[in-house]
Length: 214
Image 1 (cartoon, rainbow, N blue to C red):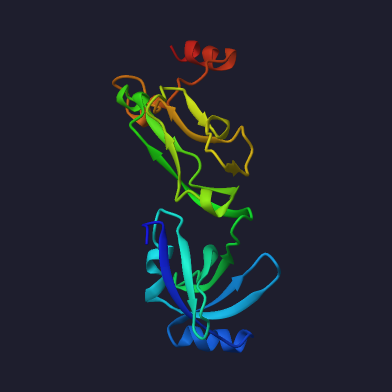
Image 2 (image 1 turned 30 degrees about the vertical axis):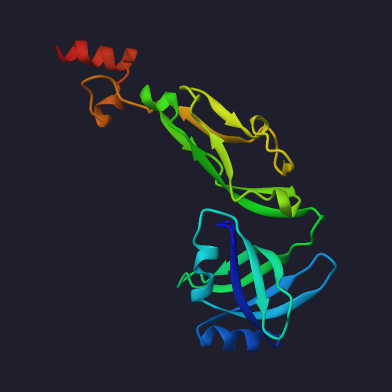
């Protein structure tokens, strides 16, 4: 098995909020397997078993082994929900892969190389961390790798600059993926507070008062 694939065991479960809550209370995760033809299977997966699927910078093809089925179902992680307070996983959706049929999936964007603008004193800004793509299962990349080595100060790299055979990026081509900019600094010798100070304006009235006081 390649590094882009992982095996996950699951068991079928009952539907409904009560059943899902009971699964969470037992320390497991309710999930659903979806297929493009409309088929969906409610499942339960072990929390420890999904760590390498959730906490990774790569998109992986999952070989889903459902208890009671002889065939392994290939799929990808479509969506994951977290509890806003505990940050625990509360639900997962898996999207089935059909050989020869295009699929839509979200993959991470990975910046590679060292931008020359950074070596010149600039700061690189990542504008996009994940992107939705459409491709055949055989063309699914683990991540969209973007080489930023040639980015100078003031330069940006856009979606239109990325070309991956067999993969369509489902986002505006004018979207900036990464940019290099010059950090803002105050004038030499000034503290941030001093840099923001200005002399009070002298109006005819204040000027007259000053002369009278003299």
